[in-house]
Amino acid sequence: MPFKFYLFIMEKLTPVVKRIPNLQKAREFTLKISEKTIEKTEEASTFLTDFADVILFMTRMTKETFSRNFEFKEFLRQCFQIGYKTLPLISVTGAIMGLVLTLQSRPVLVDFGAVSMLPGMVAVSLIREMGPVITALICAGKIGSGMGAELGSMKVTEQIDAMEVSSTNPMKFLVVTRVLAATLMIPLLVLYADALGILGSWAGANIKGDVTLSLFFLQAFSHVGFTDFLPAVIKTFFFGAVIGVVGCYKGYNAGRGTESVGIAANSAVVLASLLVLIVDMVAVQITDMFVL
Amino acid sequence: MNTGQTENTVTTLSKPISKEPVIEISNLKKSFGKQAVLKDVSLQLFNGENLVVLGKSGSGKSVLIKCIVRLLNADKGIINVLGEDVSKLGSDGLGELRQKIGFLFQSGALYDSMTVKQNLEFPLQRIRKNLSKKEMDEKILEVLENVGLSDALNKMPSQLSGGMRKRISLARTIVVDPLIMLYDEPTTGLDPVTSDEISSLINDVQKKYKTSSIIITHDMECVRATADRVIMLQDGEVYLEGKLDEFEKSTDELIKSFFK
Image 1 (spheres, rainbow over the protein chains, first blue to last red):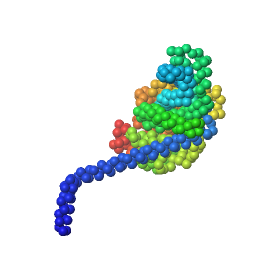
Image 2 (cartoon, rainbow over the protein chains, first blue to last red):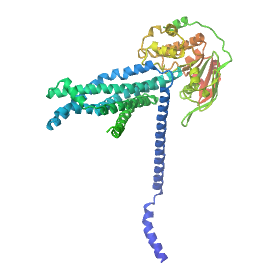
Image 3 (tube, chains in turn brown, blue):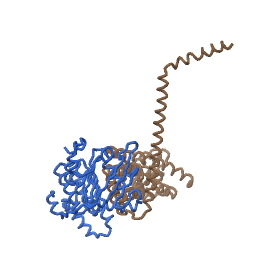
Image 4 (tube, rainbow over the protein chains, first blue to last red):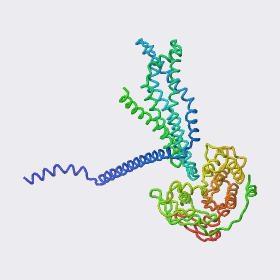
């Protein structure tokens, strides 16, 4: 019986053993697993270091925001750069946004005999969602990349170091002013884009219909309430802060080579756009919880 | 303005080098990850002298002076500047100490978005707050004349040549009357004539503003023109320290390769 059992075991094991005759392969396999483990550990470590860097950056920025000797002149210069110099782009975007929304929605509303709802629908869409998000995405592209590239090139050419050795706090002079300017200017740009959007919508409505500006605005704002307006405005402050912080963080922490300037600008746009959408999603959920 | 004109505008006050150290560095160590850049560096800079730190690229020269102003934090060792231990200073103390140190960056590091005048006003407004607008303008004109570029007042950095950028950068550094000057490869990337002019300017600044300087370079003409004393760094350590003629007479192969 034991012999039979032995034969049975040998019969079953032999093909298995034959299948792993090559110890070299087993060694390679183990080595691969070890290498992958080390690689993943390093990736996790880099991620944690980056995360700690972000926390440190935010902490320093917050501390400098509330410390004495605010760089007011530089803050005003940044407001001009971010606000005034973005106006042409936002004007075109806002007007096209309203015009296109009107032209696309009109046929459907005509089918339902609800064309009189057009101004209200466009105004609510623009004020609640499209105006803030599209303006913020445009600003993430223009302002975020601008900050990333400017601070990145300042880092590469040692201008930030020069500022530091001349007893100027670069975090206060460069970062705090830009973040605050973006936080204040982007809500204003959004309101401006909303107004231009409604104007564009009126132009769109007049392509196939005939409505006076005053009637259009009256109809539009009769559907817009305080609960449409306030949450939308509040979230734009967060959009501005996100764009400013991401742009400055990416630029301020750019590497030493010229290649890193491009990387800083590019990653600032990508990350800021993504975060704008995430903030928007969270803002909508919060608005739904408290307002509706 | 050429060097000759510059020399005319600068009062040449010969000043004996005292044995009073303004910078003392002991057993300085600095690594980036696993790469040890400074392994054990000790040196002294005496009042009124020009100390040239010589060495191959990557020998840790620039890291050394960045540790002095704490743009980089040293891993180990003591850096004593004007009687203060740099590593123990808080942000206010460090800011005050930095006001006494001028740092000329390799790239010039002029602020691209500002004119030459604004570049010079920037440190003045923050460090010499007691000066009136008129006094600031006079000071700016004075240093621009000293570097021979008084006509560049309203130019943007992008309108300046490499040599002019270095001169303006030097003017921005000396405008706040520093006690110590740190030059990071001041003649790199410049033609021989402009390099000679910058070397002369370094000497002029030492004489007129009575500064003590550390000059990081591997340009031998600059070394010969400016050095009171030379330290050579090799593999993150002090390889040789002495007077210029000691280096020139050395039979060591590495030193000969620099001074041939």
